[in-house]
Every structure is written in C-alpha cells, then in structure tokens.
Image (cartoon, rainbow, N blue to C red; front, side, top):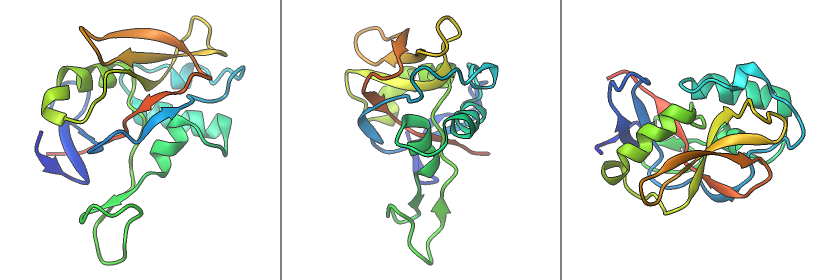
Length: 163
C-alpha cells in the first residue's frame, strides 16, 4: 500500500513477482481486443503479465485494447501522465496475468481505488481462445471467470520492481 515507482506497492515477494499497481483504474471500460483472433499459448501464462502483454501487442498490433493501453501507459515521479522532461519516467507497465490480478484482489484494500466490477487479466482463456480471456470479479468474494473479449471491462495496469 505504500507509494512507489509511479504507483502503489501491490504485491511484495508474493511468488508472482513484486508488483506496483497504478494508483487508479486505467480504464473503467475497455475491450480485451482481438475478437476472433487466437493469440495463442504465449498469452496464456497465469503469472507472466509482461510476457502476455508483449505477445498480445505483437499479434493484435495497433488499436485500443487493454494490453496496448497498459503498454503505452506512463507516469513520472511527480504523477504526470505523460511523463515530463526532468522527472523519472515509469513506462514499463503491463496488464496483469490471471494470478497477478488475483493477488491485486487479495490486497485491494491496501492498494485502494478498486471498483466493484470485473477487471481484465492478460491471460487468454484456452477454452475458447479466439473469443475469451480471463477476468476477475472485484466484488463480494471475488472470482475468476472467462469473459468475452469484446466486453467492456475495467483495467488496472501494473509494473514489476525489485525491492
């Protein structure tokens, strides 16, 4: 829950890497993207959101979708978006993988700013991989579910750090 590296420490040595979450939702409604396009096994990791995000962008290319939004996100040491000259720029954000997103849910009170709603992970669902990706419900007891990729869901970007 402490401020650090352009966001808030969300996971510290939790076995899923150390994560900093953006201070607020990066989108209150965005598509996962690529409806009908199989991104494939390289975007099905439950623990490597950075790798998933890079693969999604490589396959889907330009456009407005959750992984691309996180990859393009930047914030500087003074909280400016985009970064301003002279400030440290944090521009290595990604859409969290399925288990990373579950860790954000567990630590949601300390991180703050999460809404009762479903958030996208960067993990493509292998069941219907051309049409679904995993989302995580941030209300009640929480839970993972396969969501249609054209749905407009919330997104919170993260970045890895070394303490």
